[in-house]
Length: 605
Image 1 (cartoon, rainbow, N blue to C red):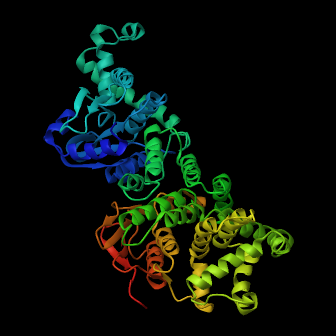
Image 2 (cartoon, one colour; image 1 turned 30 degrees about the vertical axis):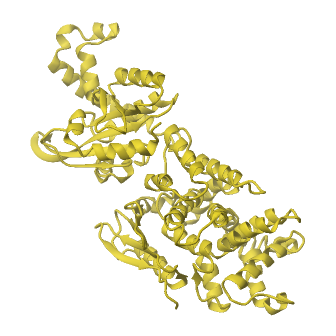
Image 3 (tube, rainbow, N blue to C red; image 1 turned 180 degrees about the horizontal axis):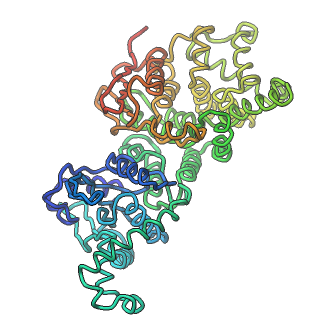
């Protein structure tokens, strides 16, 4: 049976053909035809959304709607503006929904988006098409046919072995639907209210335009629902598609099955999907502990704790999955060259899926300290309690594993004898990060090892997976590796010595897109325009892995852009790449031009 990705890739290729475009009603007068995987990458839709907002429409749903494929064409039209005709460029949209399995909520969702998209643009500029696989179940096609007929959606049956789709029903716009029903209404009540002499072709068109106003008012009331209720997706579609490009990783089939299930169902939100995916993959790898949903449970509170204090909080949970999939793609593409194996694959799964799990602890600790300091003049609330628990609750043993692994892997001084005395400054460094700072990197690593070490008979093979993963987690933030570099002899993080730490630093820094955030009210509009996007799928060759991220609104001189540029430059300073593979990050500003390329060196410093 055709997979979701098979169908999407097939559609992207076929929409370049004039014969296929004619099926959806593309006119010869239209130009600049483009297609996108999702509306979040359609600049045309973004501009239409801004225009709608200028008309006074306040939307509560992000344009990143969970549609599968969007085709956009421009056309010059004469519009009446204040009783004067004016030639303007307008956009027409064809929105494709791939349906490969039964979905009880499909009809309601399609009707909602038919109305919503007509509200953003115009009711005569949006057509919706359901796409089904030719080898899908027959009862599904019958159901889709009924939904499409009733609501004037297009319906295509796709056989990926053929050149063109089979068009079962041609798509109609929302206004077409209203006009047809006014001309020949099936409802007797409508016939009574609109007698035959009123239902002519011209009258029907005028009535449809008249009722646009009321449709708009209705939709404005509907769009107050939350993003999760609308099925909003944050994880970049291009990143999800990387799962289908995997060929060598041992658990690739499980990853592909999980992503396919998520894309087809459209019922689960991204947070539930990530929790299910990581839980399933940990079970697939037969780890001795289950995946923790601690961050998923407590992260929503962080959005509210941060914003009132004048700070921006951005997601760290969906971020973990995008980091995981990005690193997995790198591993898969250079599997032999980077000398990966099953053990390192599992190390990567653990490190990427757990590296920010303790973020709520760090953020809440800072918030609570400010609270008690401001109200009672009490400093360092909570740190004394953690100090008293440090030895009793195996935190010291867990920290010992980190220090031993760090010294052997990165500092080139294997520990022997009374190493606690020899490395007392290093011990103090991590002790402070755990008990005083409560830094999420180290706490995430410690919490992981504490879970694993709870069984005193834990095998060396289990330690061989979890200890390297925990070390990578502990090192991935600048505050940690910069502190070790300044005072404790860390010169660089070399791929040759620690591929997991290298990949985690690289992917964690690069992954800036699709991270929901809550800002203080006075900054929300500015922050809304400052988000970074993944411009293309990663560029992969025999010797290079390159990612381009860009922001639609920032100039290269803006503070947010320069901050991201500085992070890339810090990667160049601390990372030392593998021989024969070049890693680079390109930053593009609102002009879409690359303003900075950060390349990870692979020679000895």
